[in-house]
Length: 223
Image 1 (spheres, one colour):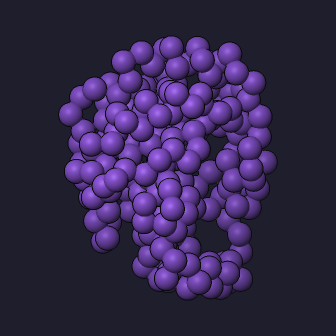
Image 2 (cartoon, helix red, strand yellow):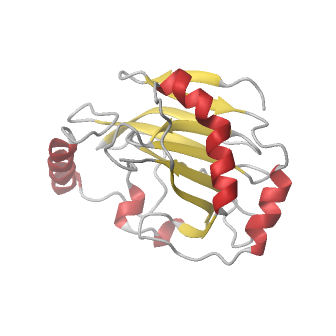
Image 3 (tube, rainbow, N blue to C red):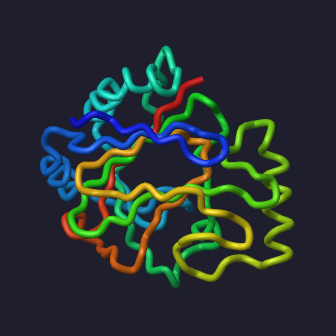
């Protein structure tokens, strides 16, 4: 694992860590994902997923724990909430309305996302956003109602975005950063930041985990 690179993004200066050569045997993770049966889990993710084995998820949590103490001030470190192998498969024209907008994983301050890119070839990345009317780059419990009200008002004024993966600025959101993906690169960021997958046209969408945009998504959170 290489030394993490710390980025502080946007006006809120929220920390994000980029770690190359993250996992000692990423090809073993790819083979594990390919051996599992993937399916749709929830309405938000534009593709299919399979649960990561519990022991693997916990090993990964322990690996990043010192970084969460140092850079996010989380001590004790939150536990594993969910962990998936994820494969983007949805054609842009088939995206549901909720999949065309930036999102956040939850409003809690102790919610962390660890995203590990496991695909070869162009991977796109993850983009981060600011809601234009509120200026919010993250959403906590106090911001949730005004965020929703601004989103509803924006949709009434501008309509829903067309069926496509969001890329760059829109009438409702300003893109504040893009963190590119790469094989065996991990991104670690707070789950309540506004973000969305960055999927330019050169990213191959495939139902084959060994050919498509495969990631491992580890979500950490506890009460």
